[in-house]
Image 1: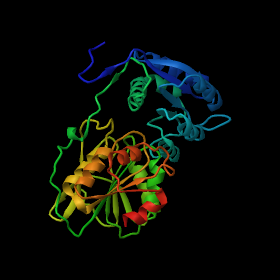
Image 2: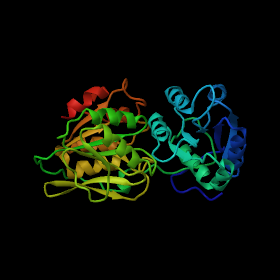
Image 3: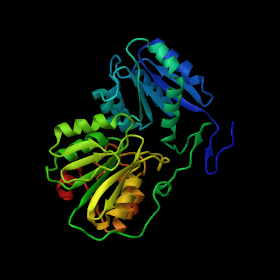
Image 4: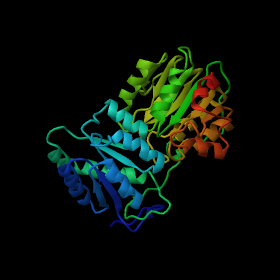
Length: 360
């Protein structure tokens, strides 16, 4: 094994995976694929969610792969219940999880961290040929959750701050008449964003959003929101102006920054390292809002696992922004808002249904 990079943590055991799929052939193929990687071990397989629940009651896996179509209970229902009781990283592996599909978006809404769309025909061959993609998805999912009592052989990469993308600045912009709203969300955020944006009128100040979501899904998610909201919603492109009555959503796997030219705001879409183990990162967006919008900004942090956005929200507050955090009762996962509240970055803590009026 290569020596660990500076700041990395090396654990003693492998990533332990639970495979849940009603097809015995798929279970065996996935086992063979995953165990071909020296860093991964399949701890068990299950033919349906009830068997999986019994196995999880005995031992919690590091990662679970989950099909959607299964007997007795479908995978989406199981995923939703699982996240309420044992929030662990889940990789959806299903023929119903094609890019932009309703099932895929629902899976992300309920807390899945990765999506692998397997074909309806030729599944065994696909899984065998996509072994690198599948193993990488499992390892990426494992790294998203640093468990307190975990042990494994994989490397946990250093947790970078927004400094890796945008240097901190104490200079807040002077106030202008044009306001801007920046929103960060993760697990459970797709549905929370839908409810929030649906409640905003067509002349709402420009909105910039980071929702943790895999690459290739954000465009379909933006179209879905655009169909049901009074405001226009689109996936952000580099250089897009931040306009009244429009929301821009960060593309999956790209950071999104708010910038300013004179009195006008625009966005920059850029590559860069993971920040708080995410790309796009809420901290990066919030820091850019602190620097370029200052007191002209309103920050909102919604449901999500982890602490991405907490430090950025505090920087926004220090620059004069007004900030709102979603309350615990209305969150799917009270992680990101809790950390922002703990750091003192949130001015108000509100249930989801009250946030739209508070923004306005």
